[in-house]
Length: 327
Image 1: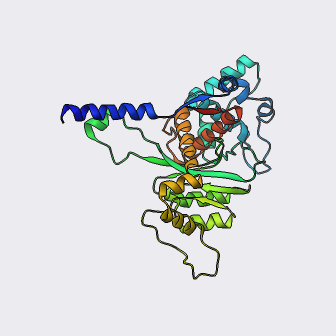
Image 2: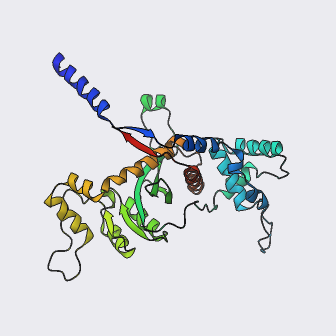
Image 3: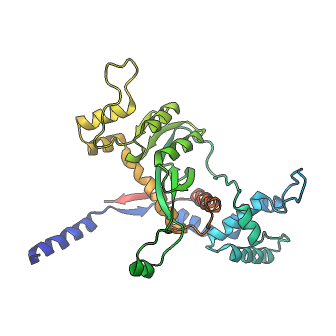
């Protein structure tokens, strides 16, 4: 390549970097305090947890559980917050209880592992919201890691496995619904099931082209969602032509607007670019917890994933940055 072409390429890269928008945090003092609170022991083990540490009798014959689901969940949560494996988590929580003068037994490694198969994790979220704007996305999580050296030397093995995390988030970063699946499950199928679980009124739903399917639109219309911000495929055809007596289909309205102007113009005018906030949520998840799952069995992987999502929601409720673009 001639020198002048190389210099042009370098200059264009520099220009692209310099043209990126820069942001500043408006509420730095409050956000800084929220970051500090993430490491406070009292945030993760509170009075309510300690009062409900032991399991209530089930009324069924046989051995009764010693620890409540809440105790198991909080112990696992504590390990994820402080990046510890199961055995180290047990030792950490025992030490914390000793230092805090708490006279409670801590679930052992085998109990945490066994109960992780069936533990139901509820996401802490704002139940008073209505007129929600929901954004769906998915990303991969590695299960059995392969070291960089091994991959370079021998390539990827057939046992290299991934799971798919599906999130439905609001623009303020709260995760409303979440699910973990195999990597062969389609995004739209999971999103339909997750929307079924949402009780609040939904004003808008946004997702990328993977959600451009009939069942996704059918579910959105069933939930009375007014704004459906899903870009039609490049080769999309009109689903419901003008000779139908029923009202125009939401997808056809989007497609006609794109044909009338441009895809970029439609994205800008419809507010589709809000979808990037789901990518921000994915980035936050992987920044805090990494892109891997430690558990080996799928049921425990799902529990691990849901606990991480619940932690992320707790962190969100403590405080988020209020950013603004610097001109």
